[in-house]
Amino acid sequence: MSESQSGLNRQFLLAARPQGMVKESDFEYRETPIPQIGSGEMLVRTNYISLDPSMRGQMENRADYVAPLAVGDVMRAGGTGVVVKSNHPDFPAGAPVYGTFGMQDYVVSDGASPPLRRNDATLTPQEALGVLGTTGMTAYFGLLNLGEPKAGDTVVISGAAGATGSTVGQIAKLMGCRVIGIAGGQAKCQWLIDELGYDAVIDYKSESVDERMRELCKNSIDVFFDNVGGEILDAALVNLSNHARVVLCGGISSGYQTKALPPGPKNYMQLVIRRSHMEGFIVLDHVARYPAAIEQLSQWVNEGKIKVKEHILDGIEECPAGLAGLFAGQNFGKQLVKI
Image (cartoon, rainbow, N blue to C red; front, side, top):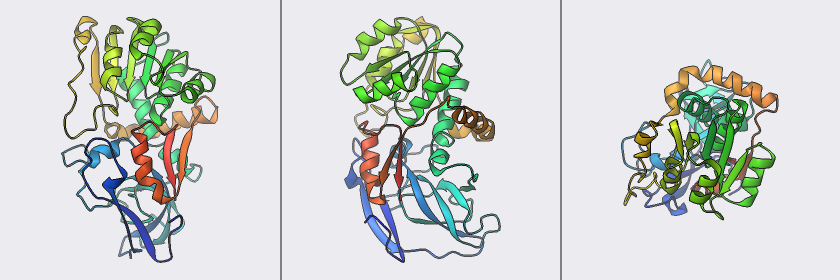
C-alpha cells in the first residue's frame, strides 16, 4: 500500500469513536475511484499529511470549535499537495496548496470547502504544516499573547520536545527567558539542552516531576505553557510565582477522553494564592494576524534562531499508527506522513 494504484484514492475513515486513547482500530481503510471535479473546483494530490493532537477531539461526537466527524467520514487532517486538475481561476494545475485534505490521496475543493490556500513557492510542505503553519502559530500566539514573557522570566513547557513545545521554548529563549522543558526520554531531553539551548529539562519517564520542579523552580514559574495537563499541570501550579500566567494549549494526558475524565487540577487554589491566571486558547482566533507571525517566524528560522525537528513517516498506511503514537509520545518533533 506504499503507492496509490492508478485510478484509486486511498482513504482512512473514522470507524469508531475512540474509547480512551486513539487506536488503529478506530480507522477503516478504503479505496475509491479518484473523484471528478465540477465547475469552479480543483483536484489536489496530497503529498504530506499532518498528524496533530486536535484530531482526537474531532473524532468525538461533541460540539467543538470545529464540527465533529461522523462515523464513516474521511478522517479530517491538514495536508499539503499539488493541484493536478483545475476548473478554478485562482488555483491552476501545478499550484502547491495546503489546507484541510483529510487522510486520503486526493481531495476535491472549490477553495472554501474544504478550505485551501495557495502555498508560497519558497515554503516547503514541512514548513507549511509545521513551524510556519498551525503549529508555529499556536506556539507564537499562545506564548506571546497569553504568556506575555519578559526577559528574566522562568518559562516551563510540558510536551517540550513536540512541534509546538519546542517552538515555544525557542521563542522564550529569544525573549531572554530562563526555559525549562518537560519531555520523555534521554534523547529528547538532550536535544532540548544541546540543540535548542534550554536551561534545564525534566525527564518525566525517569524522574519525579514534582521533585525536579521544586528543585529547579520552586515558586518561580512565571509562565507555564501546558500541552499535557493532569499531574504535570498540578505540579506546575504549586510552583508558580506571583502573577504567573498558565497557558492551556493541550491536555494529552487527561483532556482527550470521552469517559471517566480525571478530576480537575487539585492545586487550582494556587492561582488565588499567587494572584495568577490560567487561560486556554484556540489559535484560529488569531488568523487575521498570521501574516505578521509568519514573517517573524520565517526570519528567525532563516537566521538559525529557531530550529525545527520533524518526525516523518513514509506512506499513507502509517496514518492510524502515527496518530495513535502521537498520544503515546512516540514522535520526536512535528509528526508528518509523506504520501
